[in-house]
Length: 302
Picture (tube, rainbow, N blue to C red):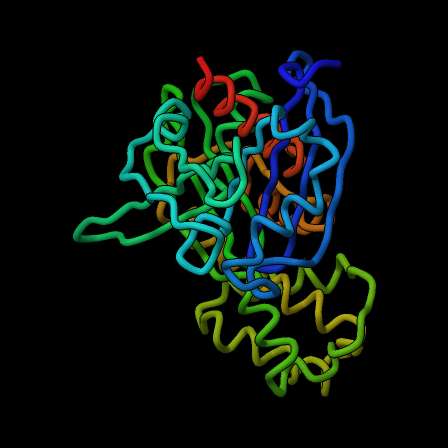
């Protein structure tokens, strides 16, 4: 396979590095490399050297292009790429890619922002997955849920990203589990418990609000039989339940979603979304990243 038939795509975030060698024609992933060398692990000057060390043998002397998305394009990353104002298309992203300094034929994809009097929000990486999800679902219109440390709910119409909202669900879960009294029984790893999760989702809907629901992880552990191994699932249910409740309130017309994430996150989110009456189409986050970056790369070289 010649160099012009291949593409390297990299999702490089705060905590993780994920690289994929892709067949341009079929979109198939030929090889994958992953590490925990995210932004927090590297100084700015180290990015080109680390990237070359990870994928240099794929590059055929620099002839195979590299496209990067995620926090790698932030001020804290390799080199800052712009955050474009909504609405944007995949063609807009391709038109504003930034050459990554220190490594030839390597490009950083911009992020997006939504800034007005009522909403201020930023995103890097998930916009690529959202456009990839459109391609995988063979549609131009979709609402997407992209769960994670900072979950994103994105709306796309006629092939354009028109709105999005960030919710700190994953980060708050980690903080509550490891740094609060209610989370104390959940310090150790435990398997996902569907019953406890559903109970947490239900309690997030109560009139007492999410702050009381989180504390119930302790009181229910003390007096209503919530086992230590169930506390983490209960807390997850409360926070994911609150995320879904807020988005259902904000978007009352919502009926169906593309759910883009790893399987471990898709399982609880599907439960919570189905409990809220939403129809869910699950999509793998890696597949969405590959599809989105392949589209942007094709437009960049068109």
